[in-house]
Structures are given as structure tokens and as C-alpha cells.
Amino acid sequence: MATLGNSKNTIEVLQKYGFRFQKKFGQNFLINPSVLEDIIAAAEVTKEDFVLEIGPGIGTMTQYLCESAREVVAVEVDRNLIPILEDTLSEYDNVTVLNEDILKVDIAKLAQEKNAGKPIKVVANLPYYITTPIIMGLFESHVPLESITIMVQKEVADRMQEGPGSKDYGALSLAVQYYAKPEIMLEVPPSCFMPQPKVGSAVIRLTRHEKPPVEVKSEKLLFQVIRASFNQRRKTLVNGLSNFGAFGLTKEVLQECIEELGVSGTIRGEALTLEQFAKLSNIIYEHKTR
Image 1 (cartoon, rainbow, N blue to C red):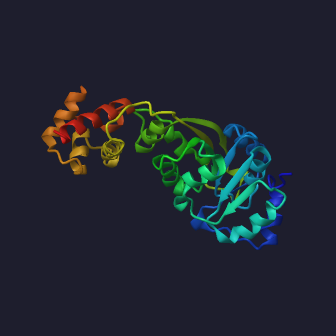
Image 2: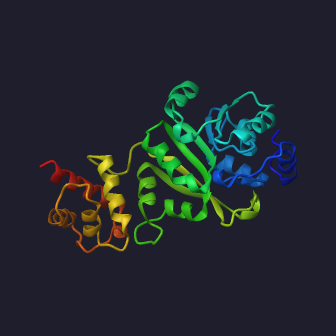
Image 3: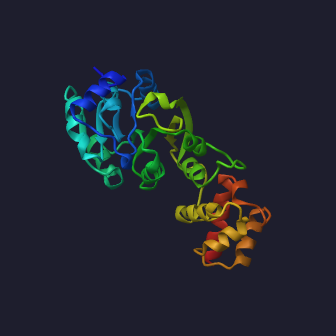
């Protein structure tokens, strides 16, 4: 039975092992059973599922996952937590703990071994400083994914589902929406964590598109165009693309590409939709390959 959803049991485990929180790992452990249950529900975990958990900490959410999923692999980078996890997860025979950096784990191989190559579900309470690299690493490596349900900083969750014209709209919004449908499932106040973070959090589910909502001739070029457009947000689109310097085209040709899209060269990147970025990257691709 899951026992770590309250502060008393969490404190007992931490004291038993003399555990000290490390800032470099961004450790904040959940201490609210109803939030933990809501996360499992948001991820739609069933007994059919293989789940990859990133950053299990002392095993709080892992216990809930083990009780809901067919099998769980939990990847924890902090070696000081491994003995604790061996203790707190000792009752469960459907979990494997890996003491590794998630960015270096061969997730496609894991999916093949544990789930016959079928799409997996990822669930995580992510350290805020590494949220974007982990999410983009999962998507860009094209591992078989059904969904990613993650606890992140509230403003990062907002950014992922934001649309054109907002100050929060940017490269992360477009990248996430290219690969998945983002939905904020619940907001979580600082009081639900130990230690308490300084900002509010949110659980967001990213449901992987079967195929991207736009067609591009080069995915790599699309993301170069997006990055160039937001590198200097206050610059016009043509200046942003020109300053990026990776397209091998003159400023005049880039101006032509933007006009071919049907918008003004003085427009800023934050005004373009994902569909417009896809069209623009295809136009630039055509000019590059002439």
C-alpha cells in the first residue's frame, strides 16, 4: 500500500536515512495524497500500461504508479536516493529502479524490452531547471510515446499551451504543440511539497500526435526557423532570421520568403501560428535547394 503521500511518513524516511535535499537536483517531494491520485488519473494509467517515471525521489509517486500500472521503470540520477528507493519500493515486484541520467537512457530500447516497442506513458515530477531538455529530448528522439504527464512550474505549463500574440508564446509552445496536444490537468500550490518551492506548479499532460498537425520538408529546418524567430523577441521576423545566420540566404531572399508567406517583413515571430511557421520553413527549404 502507498504510504508516502503524507508529510509524517516522508519525514520518517528522510530521517531514517539522514537524507539532505540537494539544490543541484531540484528536489521537491510531493506530500499530498489527493494530488498524487489526481496525477495517476490524469495520466490515465491502467494495469495494461508500462510507465517510465523520471525522478522518483524517495518513491512517493512510484508507489502509486506500481499499484496502478503493469510495470514501472523509475530513473533516478541521485545515487543517495537508491538505498531509500530499495526500501520504500520493497513491497512491489513490478518496478525497476535505474540510477542514471534520463538524458542518457536509451528509452527506445527500454520500450522494446518492456513494452514490445509499443508507445509508453511517461510520468514525472520534474526538476524545474531541466524540464525543457527532458521533454524535447523525449520528443526529438522519436521514442514510442503515448503521453507525458508531468508536474512542472506553472508558468512553464502555461507556456506549453499558449497561442500566438501572448508574451508566454515562444519556441517551447510551438515545439510541444508540433509533437503533442498539451492540457493542464491541475494546479498544485507550494504547500503540497517538501521543501516548498517558491512558485506554483501544474500537472500538464502532453498526448503525442499520431502525426504532426503540419507537414514540413525538414523538421530540423522548422525548429531552426522557430528558434531564430524567438532568439531576439523584439526584432522583426526578417531581422531575426537574418541574424541567425544558419540558412545560407541573404536578408533580401529571406524578406522574399516572408512575403511569399503572405505577411509583412516587419511582423514579429510571436505573431505567427505553427501552420505559418511550417509554411515559412517549407518556403525557405525551397529557396535553399534551388
